[in-house]
Image 1: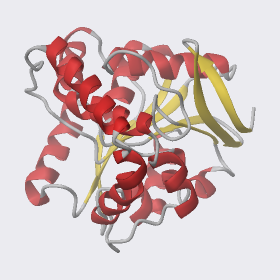
Image 2: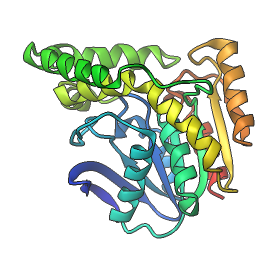
Image 3: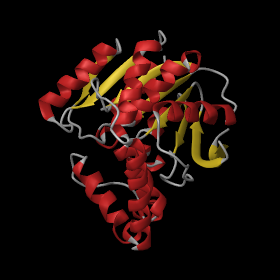
Image 4: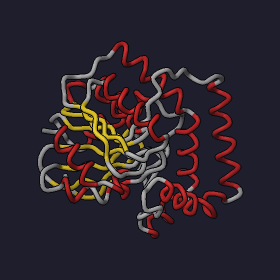
Length: 279
């Protein structure tokens, strides 16, 4: 099962990297992240766990998919990916930032396949409501995506934008991602469209998860919320992370010091949380 491959999920190619040995953990990055954003964490896990990294649709090297992202859709995509990899034992799901929505949804929709849950500075919107005019917003995404592609904006500015965002989210204010891979992944129009779609439908996905919380309980698996000490909103953000942990009956930890890309700043803390949650 180890190695790099393109797995067909729903007729689309999902770029997947599998390494290590032992119980399975699945790593899912935040908005705009790629498989290589976990490079500092993976070597700490490989001696103890089978590590599955994948790129969501449009990001990294994965194909795009039609339609807006949804919590259920992303949760089911993970389940289908595990099926394609012939994983028949429960896995520990690790979600960073917006992917916390997806991994929590997986745990609620596929409790028998969940061994543990780790949310890394996860997005949290407990009072979110769906945005208005979803059809109009989807049309806007397609229109802006097409305009950007026609004017070569992703090709010209995509890698630089990734560098700026990555640097702002780390303590060293330097994006450590490999330059060649950044150019390869962020010059594409599909990555621009994917980021635009996830950002545009962010509150819709959050509201969908809030509905799931009322109807689909979490399994009794270990859960850890690991927050970044210098994350996106200072003390108020840490308070929201603590509230998220309480909502999920999860253990609360803080990575110190760490920016939002805490897998870059504190890979040891991330690996420890994953190992603890996966027993």
